[in-house]
Length: 210
Length: 74
Image (spheres, rainbow over the protein chains, first blue to last red):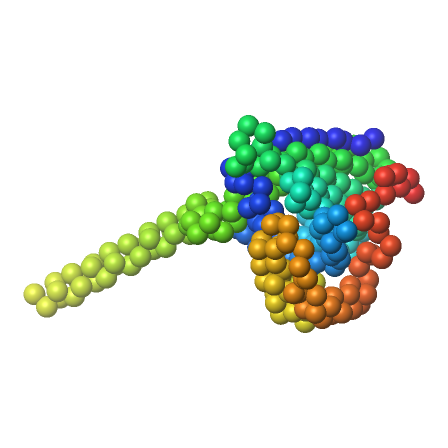
């Protein structure tokens, strides 16, 4: 059995910009799980399509409940292949992404097609499909459910990362991430507390001299 | 972004920069003049392919745009 998922996403940027951002999307504040990124194959076909293969290393988070069933020394990271075809004439980019390690435990295959939004030519539509399967005896269904939930979360992160990179490319200050806002707030609070402490100390010192 | 080969990151960044420029200014505009990044790509590849072998990353013979359609049953 394979879990199937599909959705359509929208980016309010032109197809050209989205393609550019596709190559510059790592790192971004939503991609902490991506450790390395490499192009391992690239070719322009006679009909002017760009074929690329990207190799990614990602952290490999397993569900807690599954840990006792998994090999103790299981690698903490997974290798992912992402193949892509950019067709500038038809303004279509197709990507296929899948894991090449731990595939028996869980295999996630994702296909995305990036096209110009038919209602607004300055926007880009992403048609996303995913197939999630597991061959682990007795646990496949639970793992597939876990995989599907994780995949949905990762789609949100991917879109946020894309938006971040796109706004950075356009010279805008990307809207701050939650973590950044929290850090800033904490820093301000700490600074205010420090100032207050200074005040109190100097007041106390003054009192001593009175 | 770092390369999977620790020593390849500088070569990768140099190539990425060249590629991004070519992609935006030439490729997307349909300009088929020669690719200025070929030499950089070769250098980067000889480094990264070595790292892939050393780390035993199972990428050899994986068909383009084609993970195994049949799900393994063993």
